[in-house]
Image: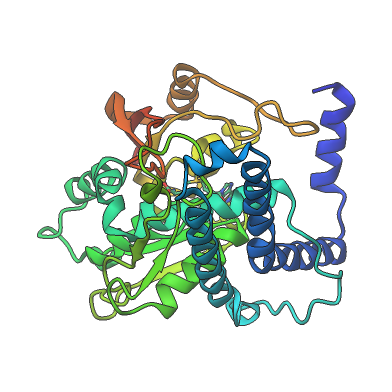
Length: 373
Ligand SMILES: C[S@@+](CC[C@H](N)C(=O)[O-])C[C@H]1O[C@@H](n2cnc3c(N)ncnc32)[C@H](O)[C@@H]1O
């Protein structure tokens, strides 16, 4: 990134008036709604292209594959189903925020979603598997369970009333980790910035109560690495638990917004749990700074995840990519004590378990304490 780009980045962050910020946010809100509602058309177009290409093959080759076109028709039905679920997700979401109304879409004629937005939407659909389906259990066991186990160890349920322990989960995705923590009786708040995630978590957490009442087709967008055609059109059912099944008087909430902007109250959290989050920073030093400030003295930061910096190689975006070694050094210089550390925890992220290609992350996992003094 050129120096002038960095200046542009800083200016973008600093120079907006509250009115400009609000107008931009509303525009963004409606753009994401358009992405949800325009999903079907965009994916149908991709399937139509696949069909056209197949039909351009010589007749004798087409005849060898009598199931190919019926399979595309099955995918089309899955797209329709996904579109219905996505429509349910965005129905009423203009009123989902306690302190904000987004009114009507006076900003733009709905435009077809961009490739970037479609990619986000496809990832969000796969996030349903990770967080709220039986199929995601082994992934959750690898990513969330170690964090929950540390919380249970540092704040044992038999030693105090854990409803007084305040735990924050920044970058909460579809909310399952935060929900699991609340399910154990802790006060837990998930924070999320993306409307894709916020709309979807709102749907699961507030509008789903029957186990496996819904299905979604998360893998239909994947045309490569399928062992069988049927793998591509298999559904995932959700939610695998009743999200309303929390202890009486549970203190569980989700907040919308940028973690760094929202959380400015010093010394207010007993524990901050970050899972696949710290690499979303433009500048991870700012995240560490915020975590240090908002933790109570004696509070702990639990982190599990890789360092796949989200803004790496993005034009006009500041991105400081530090090694784990550097991050740890910075945490130590702040004054954190590393209480526990494991440099190699193998996990997946929204993996398609039947795919012939899978990514594995070799994550770092640590618990760092802000000292009492
Ligand atoms: C890789 S995902 C991980 C989600 C979840 N923790 C999980 O493990 O499934 C990172 C999440 O952090 C969110 N995020 C990124 N920057 C954020 C910020 N500044 N404040 C709040 N959330 C943020 C993204 O929208 C995304 O949902």
